Length: 286
Image (tube, rainbow, N blue to C red; front, side):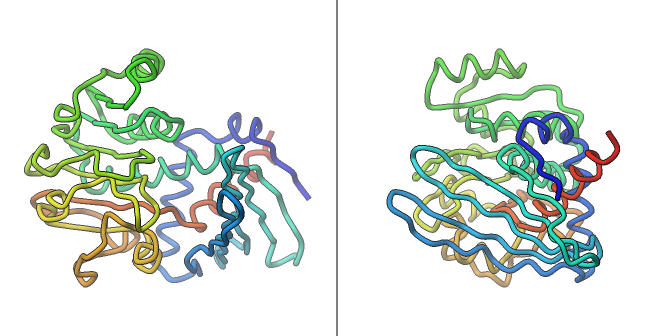
């Protein structure tokens, strides 16, 4: 059984590798060879424990991602079971892997829905925001990346480290592609700021009580998709009240349409399995 640490994941899995892994996962999801039920949450004192099961028949793995979210920390792990060998193939520490696979899915969506985007706006200055800057730079020919965060000192440091520009919320919201990757409970992005053909990727707010987008973003969106409708119904406060018949799943669409396109990302175990499998493959080659 292979055990892969956070340091090894960071060394082996590049944004480009993660994008390829997630793109392959989406292709298999579209062809119906992946079983990916919604994640299951259990409350623990002060936090939550989650399990995300998946079977990727073509990749040859059954497995799960699991995490314990507490104020003191949030350990993540992916376990891969070989279907052919009936054994545990690998245990992969998955905090960095989760950052990379989430950003990779956003990059795939951006490539499909906003291939000509030249400006990127990011709400958020955490590690997931940094992963998105790297992944979307890998996927798009960006000229500028504008960033907004709540803490001005942290914002300045983030922009210096990642070659971005600090900006007002309105400036960030007026970019060609806009990513919200925050822990906000109230909207940080207002629909009035958006360009008529903007691409919006909402990554944070993964519970029904949290929102990153105001009502006008949804009202103006001509096209709405998510990674899993079943999971979004349980977790996506930003889509609460939507007519679900108008929501598509990312694996089933390869381009948007005229007007504002919105992708709500909740995160799939299928992406974790695919990224972990790539790490195992890369580890074997070193």
